[in-house]
Amino acid sequence: MNDKENLTQRRAGQDRDAYLNAATIPNLEAVKAKQKATWEAGDFGQIARTIETVAGEFMARQLLQPGTHVLDVACGTGNLAVIAARHGCPVWGIDIVRNLICQARIRAAEEGLRINFMEADAEALPFDVGQFDLVVSMFGVMFTPRPHVAAAELLRVTRPGGRVALANWTPEGFIGKMFNVFKAHLPPPPAGVPSPMGWGDEATVRSRLAHGFTDVRLTRRIALMRYPFPPAETVEFFRQYYGPTQKAFAALEVSAQDALRRELVELQTANNLAKTPGTTEVAAEYLEVVAVRI
Image (cartoon, rainbow, N blue to C red; front, side, top):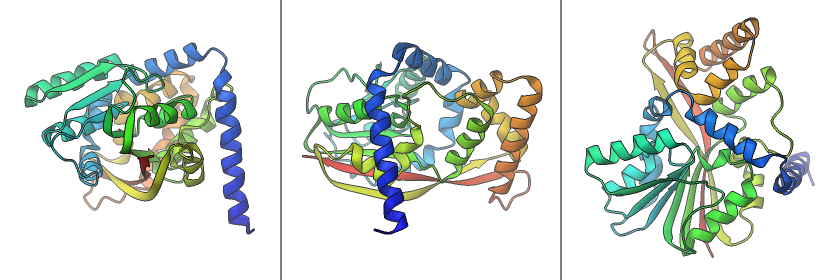
């Protein structure tokens, strides 16, 4: 067995231990309440607009047909749900964040789309067994504190022969690097809560979908994220609208905030691909996961 295979198996084993331990996360309700507050901070709807093109590309690969029953898990403001509804699909969307569900409902109403948006937990989906033909999540379900529970719920609500399709940031990609910057400045996460970036690691995903799924296809893809302002202002944009960034800054003293801001600006600058002066374009890698329910 070579070094790469050893590393892959070690990662998978560590992740299995982490999420099995997560079944007994101390103060789980407090963890969930903090997550909810984090995503309610700022205005994620502003961030969601910057990845609408990525959502369109992702859903174009899902072969949507009129009548396909679709569930968008951790739907945010409804980027995926809206696309499915435009294709004539009966669509449901859930999220723990009330203000995002409100935005999603307004958005659907403005387009004249009938989408069943509701406030609910991805670890306790309020749906029947095998209710959906397609269950999707873009940069959402990856943030649940108990990934094995979330995976079991995805399996439960998908009909036999139906598909689960996820888009998850990778640890090596731009968003993974951004979260590493936060990690260097903030206290460690609660005991037993694994990194959300585990959903972007191939070995980890295969271990989580090992039971009940077949034909698990993993593809690394690029999300081009474009902003009409330079890197320093892009950081301020995230600081104002992106809950995790806003909460990270709020947790630090002023001097530590300056250091965090400097590192984030350096990261945006180093990864800026934009040819137009005064703009920012970043290529953020994500792992596309498509699995068929047995």
